[in-house]
Amino acid sequence: MSDVGSEEFEEEGSKLGEYEGDRNEAGERHGVGKAVLPNGDNYQGQYECGKRHGQGTYRFKNGARYVGDYSQNMKHGQGTFYYPDGSKYEGSWVEDLRQGHGIYTYPNGDVYDGEWLQHMRHGQGTYQYRDSGSKYKGSWAHGNMDAAGEYVHSNHRYDGNFANNNPYGPGKYVFDIGCEQHGEYRQIEQPADTEENGKSSKAQKSRYPHPRKTYVTLGSSRGAEEVLPLCL
Image (cartoon, rainbow, N blue to C red; front, side, top):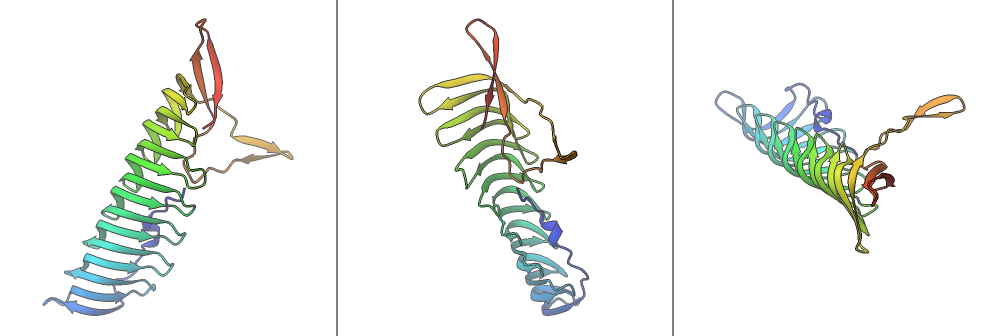
């Protein structure tokens, strides 16, 4: 996925530049004003003692834009960030980081609605895949599906534990036809490299959180174990 951090677009350069607006007795920017920075960025909104503080709009020369609350020059409170790649984050900010509850719409149309911590999906949240219509609802840790969750497809769903975006541990596979598959899910290691024309090439990591092929260990009627592939 494109979890591009806003800090990549916030080199605001020198505090010098053109300013038009209110000032306090000390000559600091204070009240409402507009600033054009030497690097081409511009800000229009509230100031307090020389710093962006309150409501404001910051436009970056690369097309990115932030509209929302500021505190002591940092995005803090509620605000919306429009990224150059077409993605958008609308929600809570803490000291320039996505933190608290927020909704992120990705360039491919996927949407995450849930909790954030230091720019990463963390806590409870729902990730909706636009192309497939699939949906994950559950716990996240450091940007990945983790612990208890539910992965819903058009005709089946998985309820159970996740680890690093994949089913892991106890869980069940529920089909719309009325049957269920219970078991312990585990990851099977697969080679990361492929050989082609004598050259090794590594598969590119997906930008979006799709589970890999997972295997489930089932107990048969005779007590023996049977390993079956499970493709989410």
